[in-house]
Length: 358
Image (cartoon, rainbow, N blue to C red; front, top):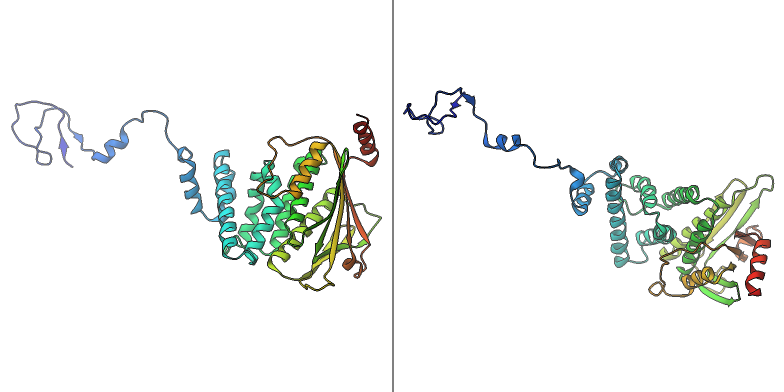
């Protein structure tokens, strides 16, 4: 081991073999490499860590991590959860844009577009983290082609997502408003979308929409076991999403959906003749003008002109929906299926009277 001196004595004229410096009579010490000297210097300030990097760099790093480990990264800190959600959101948007530009009628484009329309309202409201967290299991199930999920995987994703939304919001007006907006946006996305009638009253808005191709109805209902409204509403949104996916990709199907006390049969027909199945959606919105004007603009205006509310209205309202499908009646389903959300009929009538009196 070589040694170097620290003194500046001129008595000894012997040169140092390694460094060419003069030796001294002081105590010798081990020679430390230059790189090690840099690391031994005390840090001038707080120590840096991985989270101090810019979001763009962290997003690039997470992109190289296996999708199976993203849950662990999200659980590390709020910062890493945000970065992971940012990566998933950007990858989803890029995949949607890439597949839509390549072929809008492909299954990949139809699947991603259907997922976006079924969840966009909730993401705009602030449930983006919940959306990304529920999407991770779906991406892991199809890791070879993450953004091409099968219909069953999309169904599981939506069931989990809507269940988490129901646990967060419960039976509130916020839940009702987000649900109705999502339902209307799904209706509007069908190519065969047609408004047959629309009328506005003092405190209500009535509208009838007709779709060609999709059909759905209730095949059997058990009166002994009551079904929760949230499950019933969720089931309708999932069926509408699957019908929209079939229309975009132009694929005919017939499927049965089982619940605790109902069996629903629904499908899509690709025939373009006069006997093409038609389904009618007649609904009424009772409430303040702020509520029904928002819902009406969402349905009747173009996506470019529609403005998402900066402050979501919290007024109480009632949404009454009736679904008529003659094709479903051929399979033994009931003539119509009714869905009610929001205020009771008595409360809605009282609020209507108070508005009309003014």
